[in-house]
Length: 142
Ligand code: HEM
Image 1 (cartoon, protein in one colour):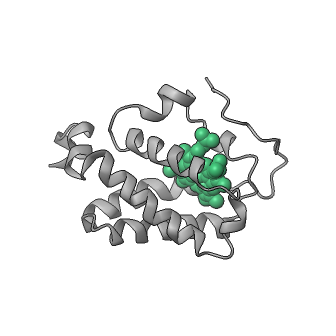
Image 2 (cartoon, rainbow, N blue to C red; image 1 turned 90 degrees about the vertical axis):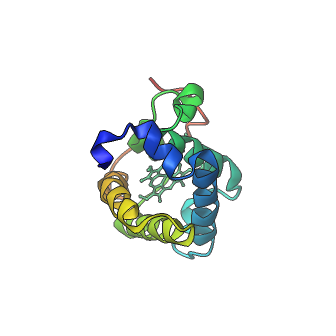
Image 3 (spheres, rainbow, N blue to C red; image 1 turned 120 degrees about the vertical axis):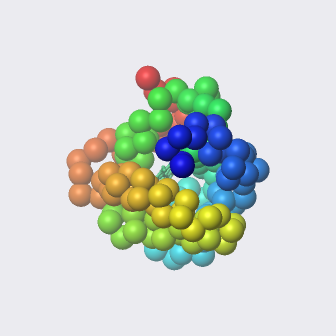
């Protein structure tokens, strides 16, 4: 049963770091092709791609790769410089689910992950909020 497995085990089963990096590559291809979502991202997609990979490695039960470099994720705060609407959250989730399918991840596992990612994505919506929009520039947050 999945609940009896350690998260690390689950991370190895899905294919470890290589699988997560493959997922992020595919996800970013879908973002790049999305005329509504692409403008939310900076021109150079590579730094964000690397950060998302490090974060997901950690989130999926692998080594704490993201926090070793950037500290506490504080994801909502880190997204303030980017104006994110409900439409963007929906697209982000759709592309993430599609990327998991395209990478051949197990369907039941995708459903579980999607269920966990959906509230997180909607929590990132800030388009109508009066939040500081200044770039955070890789600051280490606690
Ligand atoms: C709701 C829709 C979302 C949009 C439109 C969005 C967009 C973005 C953008 C534009 C960046 C900056 C990329 C860069 O600096 O090059 C970013 C960073 C990031 N996003 Fe998202 N994101 C969304 C949801 C999420 C979710 C649900 C997660 C986690 C599962 C996530 C994880 C991250 C991480 C870890 C970073 C790097 C943060 C940093 O260290 O600066 N994002 N996102």
